Length: 259
Length: 254
Image 1 (tube, helix red, strand yellow):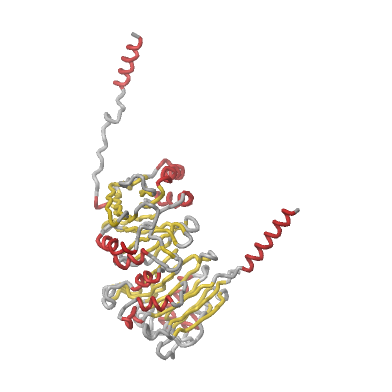
Image 2: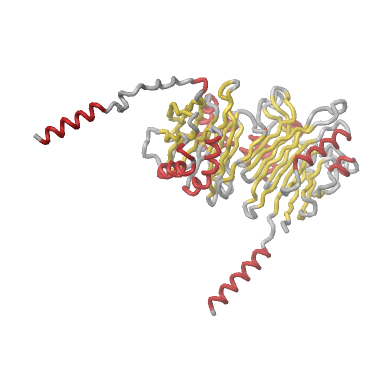
């Protein structure tokens, strides 16, 4: 009898404990690096120092150079990964100055998958092709697979950006919990945001993110998918970046609700 | 007299038997075509510990910059996730002008244990293969020469249960003529061979334990592939302290 009571108690405790176990919080920082550190003499170290103070799980970066002439043939992404002890992925948008130019992701957790996907638009309007880079990771405490994505849409026309946003929707899919951040070059009223991104949950608010010295435009965003499954614990537009970049950084803590 | 008769009879039998290896016409050993040879460098001390020390980064990076293999593997370039975080593979990649991809094997209370693969350019697409909760394999293409592309699967283990979990993936790799290279505990090697024999029909695979100079090392290097792959050579070069480069040359036969 005592044994039965013990087993019942243990089971009840486990049920209670599991129900009470909070979903894991994910902290993401987004930064447009302004030509991969043009304002820091193409030095990655000040960016690493900035990132360190927020201790994020993931960092999504735009305007990243890989061994271009202008940045002295440096690999900005790997330099940051080395400084921070993070895992990294780089997604090329275009060949540029004997190197590559695109976006990057840093991750606290080992990367399971890297996928870099070209985004195009009407050639008559588009300035240059862009990219959607995503990585899949396993969040170690919840064992939840997460997809972290980054993009930087072309600043040519609304039509091109909307087309690119539609393409990225097709690439991302709907099955894996996803956080997507980046420079969309689109204001909140634009169809790129109101229509093409309508199936996403807005993680960010509408506070202006550009220019960092005196923000007047909202063009940087963080979205989550599936919509309604993310609880935003905090969101901040960080303006203390004026020595690093012309865009404000964005920092968020979110929880994925897997019920 | 009876014994002598037996002896003569036995000598007659042996004399008539023409099926000894020496008498059969030999198939000439195909000469080594180095233009069809995959070169994989594994940097390791084969102890199972992380041999990449901060003081040794520059020496290793200088060496890595110059080496010309198709794939460079930093074995047990473990990533410390407990503060302060440290990713030796990324540090070395910056100095050696390479791009790092980490392939985990297991996890400890403060580190991810695994290998860092160093590539000349960022990797735009990849997906690790899950073996256990912590152990992953990575397959990557390699161009041996223009027009000759192969796939290499990096599969390192530090526990026999990981080997068991990896068998379906290794079988698939062999069937698809993917070259498999990795490190494992030396004591697991015979179990590994037996498990492969039970998994791959008709022993239709080539498995080689690449004999390093220190035959008692805790870990060993292995090469696995279909019969199309022929292990040709191991070159062992000291880099710093116990850290060595093991250059494995494996020919993809015509």
